[in-house]
Length: 146
Image (cartoon, rainbow, N blue to C red; front, side):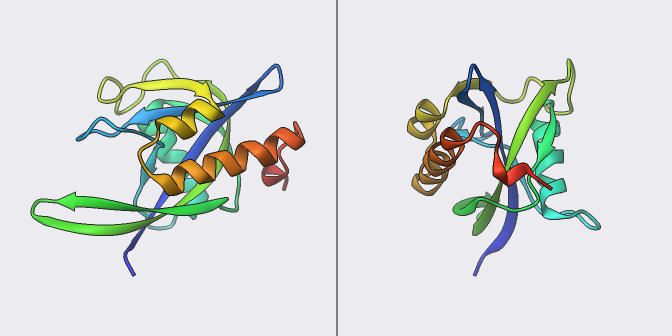
């Protein structure tokens, strides 16, 4: 099995329509979600929250339980590793004017359906679609309670 990473699925509800923020990856400029490697003394959902801040300046509430995971191949020099990325929903409340990786990536808010079409990874596409279906049934997201 590969190494772990943690990701945030940033979302907001606009007039009860679910919107998701996607960001581009640094190297291939593909649409994805903020993600990063585990951090010492940080719980997985806190790592996802910090990555969302560092990569997109996002502030919000992150669910303590992942909604699922997807596989991602990461390249370090000549080595390629398969990463298992756990995805945590993040209800976004705002965005800072400045953040550590500002200018290094593009970011867009799109409908969940558009987000599912734009992301490169099929497993991530399915996670977004499943999350949208679940969230659409109840405007208050059960994954964020408690």
